[in-house]
Image (spheres, rainbow, N blue to C red):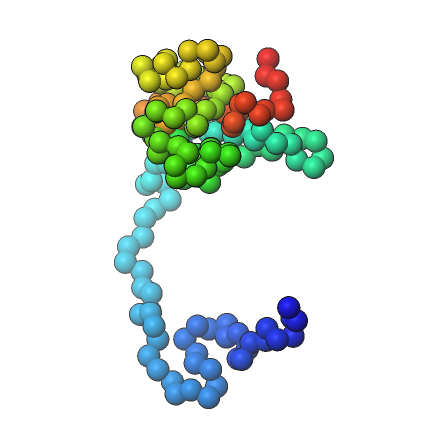
Length: 169
């Protein structure tokens, strides 16, 4: 495809309320913004957060592990935290018919808890059944609850532990 064909009809306007030069002026699409209230800097208390390090099973081109850091409030399922943060959870099983959407019946949301297992809920009955022959550090993200709303700490999660390239001690 020739890149010269893809030219703009009008130059980009920095102010979105200005019409192109050959059109009549119209009302702005959005009303002007105004301040409603101000809050003093010391009045808001930050909620407690859990820090996550998600380790990908693939290495970066320089040979180092691909680690993505995220913060999330406690009291949520690990699956929801990972999906909300766009962390690869299912790998090759990321198809509508390949996973159970969080009901704990398929076993495709498998993760390994490297550090911070004390912040996670105990294994559910579904996990115990699905993970009978797996290491004790492996969990189903859809069945794992991360602490409560007041939890603070760090959790290191190995994504797709079947394909990991790092051996944890």
